[in-house]
Length: 106
Length: 131
Image 1 (tube, each protein chain N blue to C red):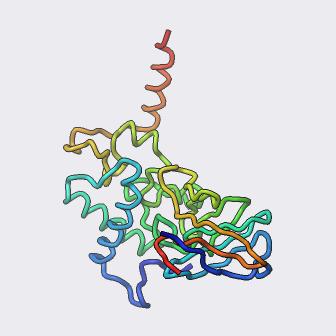
Image 2: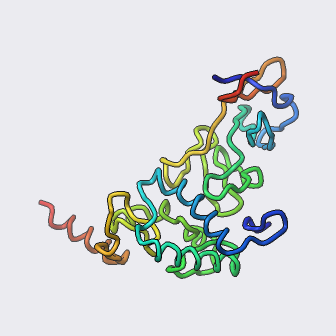
Image 3: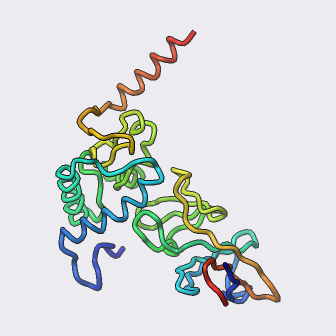
């Protein structure tokens, strides 16, 4: 079961920007890159560091603690594809950005 | 950067931090096909060393490998460092310090450390032997 939850207004995040959010108890990092919104878990699977403090380079985000790098499109850890950060669906409707949360019912 | 083993402004004791590291590491090594060494004494000892390193240097580095002071190099030695040395460790069925072993391993003392130099030489030899 999953539901869409309002996150932010489309214009609240510039291209190349990132914004940490808490939606339905999930710590999420919303990123806008090349006009597309991506939503990933804000916790690095290594030691739980907040990826929102990391560096975004194209579609790759680098964790601020130990430099682990993840593809924001599919959540894959670049050094070991078996490790992934959770990725959430996004959609833009009427200038509003929504994030799809699994296990939540609106 | 805030130290991530500080909890609510209070420093955690070593035992608690060891347990916390164990839980975090388990989540990382499991999908890579590794587990903690069945030798609980060595696991406890190595985790203790890592907590000391974290106190001194800010990160739980591998206790058995040398740091250079260069971030690119040293970050690849933060435990669990398996993702950055996969081919080498898979060949040994263990990580360098022996904290983790392949899931198939029952007796960690059957395994040997193989230096990276020896591994490369062995690979090159095999290549040459192929018809």
